[in-house]
Length: 364
Ligand code: NAP
Ligand code: FE
Image 1 (cartoon, rainbow, N blue to C red):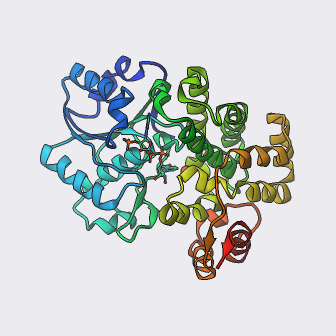
Image 2 (tube, helix red, strand yellow):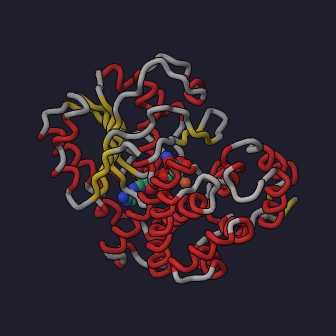
């Protein structure tokens, strides 16, 4: 994981010198409000001013960022002469920043972003996280929605940010509901990365500690007001999300993520919840195919796998919905041959995916 990662209060301002190594001008990429509201944008501007780095701001990134938005931002980056891209936000502005960095450095048709094999390296990227979920700060992935409304990871060989800053104070303004939903994304990364054919002893260290941190906190933040979540808890949640990112940078995600995307694309369900609805099935699969790993996890977190599944289900706000048989077949088949299916414990296939989908949703 080549990203220089600095976590702690005031980390942006105190480590501003690092930014001067990336260039003399930058495009700041954010969503509409939160980067400003949580104080991260002000800190970044103070840091850039301190280093005499010129900047312009692109604040049009929406949730589940669109390819067309990234193309528009890359044109702004080019005309401004940005030498690096600085993304502030949750996974959406951070992922957009990575995609913009590719598009600003390469004359390619927008849809070629998903094909990889770019002539020029991306512009350097710095990231400032404001949610505790995706761990995008430390992954090489950028999930960008295409013109048909489908979410795909872009394939960039140098997709890791050069520098990532994490200041858990920025996450203090995240509502309790969204804090839980992003924590579910982090726990999905950690569990999909732990019960994973690519897991190794190093990724396990991060996975076990991240799952432990989330199990210690997720129950007590569910249903709370944001002000009642302490900075200490915010810090633990943020660390867990970073550990999840470090894990999936090595292992990739598994079938919970692939089967979750359509819930966000078509039913507007937040990404974390969309993945977490599959976790009880996934954990049971881990217990079946990787029993030693399950025993080790239970010992480390002091909780049986049944209790872990129950904890996740009790915080996953999800109402039954109806999905057509045709849709079930197409979702199940969409990911055949993908790493997400292959890395899942056992030999996961479309038939098994369809069984889970039919069990979870009413069919029409
Ligand atoms: P997000 O989509 O970045 O943000 C969701 C909402 O939260 C936005 O309305 C945003 O407002 C708001 N928000 C962000 N920070 C806030 C703060 N500090 N206080 C109050 N509100 C805040 O959410 P996310 O869950 O972090 O990211 C999800 C995206 O990441 C999905 O597209 C998912 O597919 C992707 N993802 C990427 C990876 C990876 O490795 N790259 C891994 C998992 C998921 P503004 O719009 O005003 O900013
Ligand atoms: Fe995720």
